[in-house]
Image 1 (cartoon, one colour):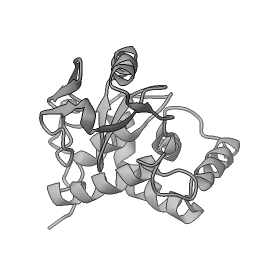
Image 2 (cartoon, helix red, strand yellow; image 1 turned 60 degrees about the vertical axis):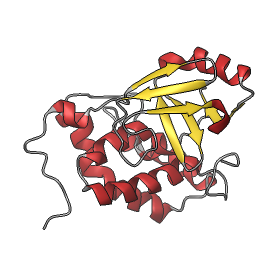
Image 3 (cartoon, one colour; image 1 turned 90 degrees about the vertical axis):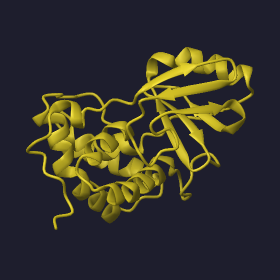
Image 4 (tube, rainbow, N blue to C red; image 1 turned 120 degrees about the vertical axis):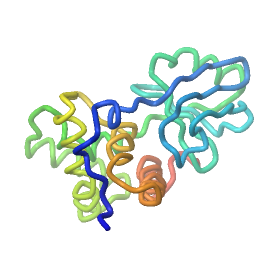
Length: 200
C-alpha cells in the first residue's frame, strides 16, 4: 500500500485548509476548527493563559507555544495577543524563520545562488547541517509545489510552518502526519546549537 495519499481527488479546500478561528479572551484563547489533528488544538480547545509558555507575535502568523505544541493564530490577532501577553504576564519571544528559509525554493519568485547561500548560512547558524537541509527539502518538495502552484496560490513572499503542515497533511497517512508534525515543530523551534527555541 502506498504511503502517500493521491491528490487526484482533492480540491483546493482540502490542501488550503487554513488554521481555524481564534477568540482571544481575558485569560484564555478559544481555538475552533483547527485542522492539524496531532495538535492539542484539534479540532477545538480552550487554552488557559497559565498553560501558555510564551507567544511569538512579531511578524506574520502568531504562534502560541504550549508544552510540546505550537498553536497557530492569524496575524490579525497580533495586537490583541500582545495585550493578552501583557495582561497575563506571558513572555514574548522572537519569530522563528526556519521553515520560511527551508521553503524559499518553492516560492513564486527567483531563488538565486546568492539567496541560497544566505539562507543556508542562517540555517547552519541555527544548528542545521547542509545534508539535513537537503533531506528536509527533498521530503516536502513535491508537495510544496502542489501547494503553491497547482492550487494557484502563487505565494511569492513567504511560506512557513502553517503552509508545510497544510501541504503534508493531505500527503501522509494519519500516523505519518503525526510523525511529521512532531518533526516540523522541532525544526520550527531550533535555534543555535539547541533543538529548542528560547527554552520552549
